[in-house]
Length: 353
Image (tube, rainbow, N blue to C red):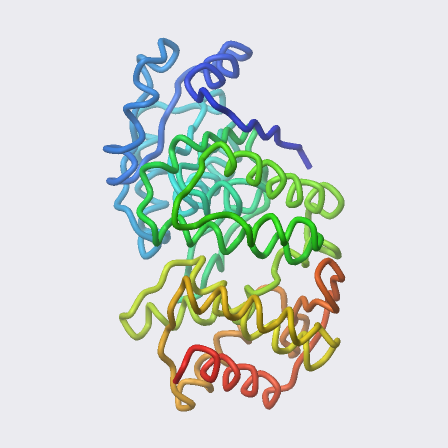
């Protein structure tokens, strides 16, 4: 499997120019959504090597990460003469890098692509590691391939366009990385001032967080072993996210993962003795910053059903990554339906239902 080069940039235009000078492409395409076209694309428009690049625009929002939008991208590439020597630049959040990465990986059996994440969540999660895909039949990232971008260019200046909720959505993944890595990194992450964002300090924190994911992905690119650690909080978190769309109360991905971490930290405490005081500390931080997503006990069976469709499952068992303590990763853990419902009870108690 090819590797990707991650660049933490302070001048996206200069670094992208340097990358483009290394190879000649028959044509260049820039994939954006309706939001990033307005807020972020202007930062690339002074680059001479992009003067003839074609912009492919899709509707914003994770609900549009689907087969219909994917087909529209393939159709545009085909009708405008894209070849196997074309390049696709994905400029946007995780929805764009997931969708664009899959489009590039499958068009003419694969063309080069570069990810330029414009959200903190995209930089920490979707853009790095090579996972691409679309949602299908209500399930998150159900169809896709693992195929790394040639480059991932991360410039924190793009994150200044984010509202606070979208910033917090990315911070949840940074918190996850810290929890699976070390007490030292967790302390740095918890000490970061979310009410007065220092973008220089963020760049330093971001560098380490991306490094954590890179090291894990390099050891296990196809998720057979330690890469499953990156799924902490996601088994229940993805169920929350999918359910939120079903009931037409959509929540951001990072919020769903934060709520999923409350549940999976409870399972960690119950099954592998994650420290109670650390559990309470993380839960309090999540409640203070992310609020709550309302569920009732009547919703448990549907949430459980959504968990059963998680790609990490082996046979009939729902697979979890749990933590013995910060940095002590326990992959391939299972929980009974009763234990999962207890975790959902715990979540409701913590957030105040």
